[in-house]
Image (cartoon, rainbow, N blue to C red; front, top):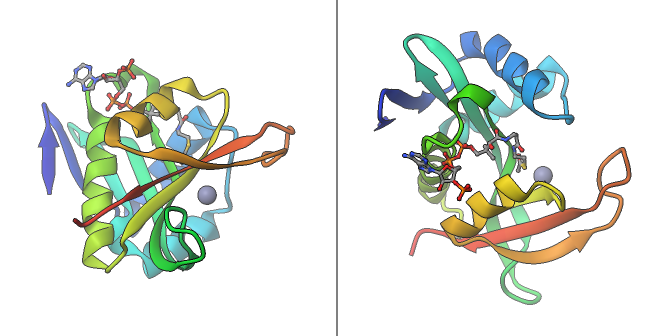
Length: 162
Ligand code: ACO
Ligand code: ZN
């Protein structure tokens, strides 16, 4: 599907979920049931991508396509790609994999007729926020005590497919 250096970006398959769960456990405090991953994969296979190096998974991005209030236009409705979770194993960061996963999933979102992409991110997660900003995401809101430990989330969004 796409390459960054020796990293291959491709669609997630059912057989990859165990590795995706493992990467999530290692990198993020937000965990989900295995069922949740399989459910998203079966409903939105185009926007669930993995990054692979020499046969091992080192990153993933998992998204949903939703219909609801726009994060970019007041009172408008929109088809939105929701980046539910993205992560790259620590040893493989800073090599463009996260950027590539985001670009590739945004492109796949537009094929499912989404006109914007959005996500929530911890206010303290400066590395992820910097990545989203570099891609052109803008802060569209803030959700107080969004996470279980009480931390707030920034909602960030971008128009896609133009
Ligand atoms: N060579 C060297 N450096 C590069 C290259 C390259 N080819 N391409 C980009 N970079 C730099 C970028 O400039 C950037 O640097 P900066 O932010 O210090 O300016 C940095 O590398 C990161 O960009 P990428 O390499 O594209 O991103 P990465 O693969 O490191 O993944 C991610 C970013 C996913 C946020 C990662 O840090 C991570 O997994 N963090 C832990 C999990 C996490 O916080 N996920 C996001 C939660 S929010 C949500 O899921 C919606
Ligand atoms: Zn979310």
